[in-house]
Length: 322
Image 1 (cartoon, helix red, strand yellow):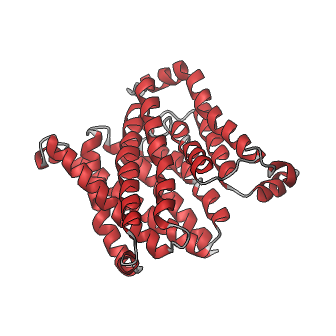
Image 2: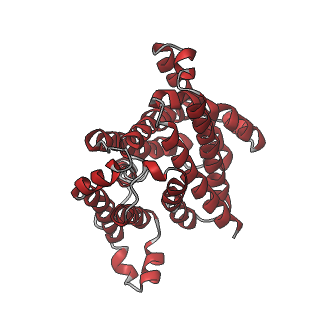
Image 3: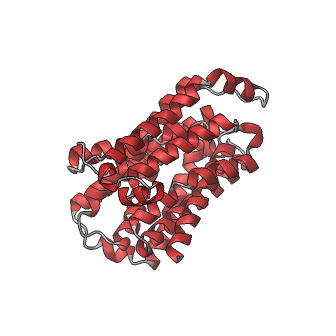
């Protein structure tokens, strides 16, 4: 039960992270936000690595493990996070959610190609549901735009969709790189150490990008309000990652992963509470989000559990197609 509680806490903090990022990008550039959220991850996870034996775990790493974990950091925390922030800025946190769920399709495609994993009937149902979410949003874009206009917010669909796909590419590719880094005998300590290495590599890239734009004056030019929101975001996402790894140490992956998908429900709730004036939250938008999340759950949960819950044939759902 404690592991389930930690997984729920992880989902809740990730939802809070989304709401604070949305507020931050209202009056700041994406790079200004990343200049705060990415570097702050280094001291936070340095402390966590110290507490959980991460530095000891690093001593046994190969050069390849260091390289893969550093690359994972750049792909996830630079490419993926930049796409996430830009999509959130263009569409809002809620509208960008269905597009960003495509990241799980990228992860599965790479796992099938490089890790020789297979696709089942249940997985294919999940893929269909993930794709239906963005389709609903696009078919209703005129009505959504009219609703948003009343709030003084105009969704930018083309850049939002494109950056959402960039986010999906970054977030979907990083799990493969992390698996390559950890190998078959990776531990929780290795995983936490990996987050620190990934954040450090990403920070070096972000710092270089910031200096190319003017250095410290560029970061402080966003104002204290946006800096405050981004600082909260850095703390919330760090808490989410910590609770995630602790949950995985105490509960099965098949339990933790579906619970973490509830982060989207928290995302809707917290954005409704904090960003109601900057988000479109009608029933169809929420339905598209829920369908995309349900599809993601079907792609990550055990087929036997789904069959038992919906009273379906487990053998049919678990049949391998690819």
